Length: 327
Picture 1: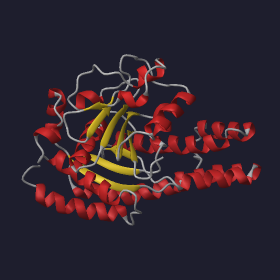
Picture 2: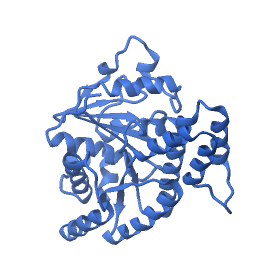
Picture 3: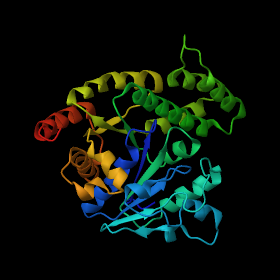
Picture 4: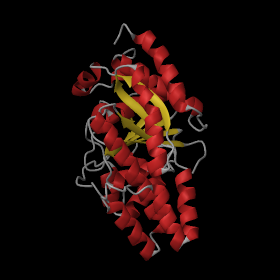
């Protein structure tokens, strides 16, 4: 894969958190910064990213690519009216793609990695289907969008749990005994003694130390980046310490807190009108938040971020003071 090509999958633990509105406007914001960008609808089974970009649903998509061998993946690229921004539709004219075979997922991933672009934004389906989990793993730093509402936070944890176990399962799948053990332990619902990743890897280590080490190494590469959407006040970010503790204790996983977007009622209106908000109201709370994140991506995406929770809290406090009149 071209080292200069950055692929960013965008997922969410549940619907209704503004994932697709964020993905579409993020792609626009990066394109406006002068980078060749592609937005890809990978919400197979519920593709609608075109509406967020103000495009008609008339283009061949990934579904057609999988169905017709004569279609080349690069030919799916549609140049939008926005300079530097291209789009690839999801299902196109071929619906019912909620879960596709493993080999087809690999084929899609391979073709995405060959696209002529500097930034590729993947809008994934909400929840934890095999499609979503596999496409999220295409990058070690995928974006996970959530709100501060309790159901959204719970589903955010569930997404990461399913993703972590998916990574472990992919490592141990060729050892039938260990794979079965991992699956059974994952399905266990013993609330009195919930299984942690640390305990699970210790169990794997007892049977096959090499596999346990490989699984641990694979997990260490992943640092999902969290975007909090529809926020009301910077103080909501004080919960990140608790999130860190929970994720480390249960999933042995570290995340980066990468962005905070204030609630903006204009987003819903823009979606209904099929107009990207960034193109119509570039100085709204939502679009300012997305633009902040876009600049952060082009400046520090591939860098390690120390104390990301503290840094985001400080940046959000400053932005809150500037936006008070708009909130």
